[in-house]
Image (tube, rainbow, N blue to C red; front, side, top):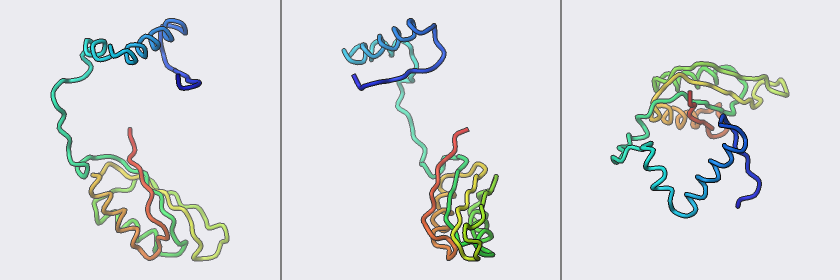
Length: 142
């Protein structure tokens, strides 16, 4: 099929679980999946309404490359605060060359915030003088 695969998780045991997974794959392959899975009533048949992504609330992981000098961390924190994004934790390691102005990674985990506010803060951080590269960020699922 697709080469070597591995299925992991609780089940009825190796052979019964493998048999059930294979049966589901066969149903999908021969076009019976819609009948098989619709009987389980796992999905609501009503059309889903999507919220604007800017309103979705999440925690965020943020990584910046910043100059290792006084005030840069304060500017980053002020930018988050201006957008009502609260910080959960911060990690900043020492610069390798121990000279002021070296580039260091700055990692921040936030409390829950709206995606719109967080993205605005991330865009603003990219324009700060002490930030040397675009922000890298991901939403964090609890």
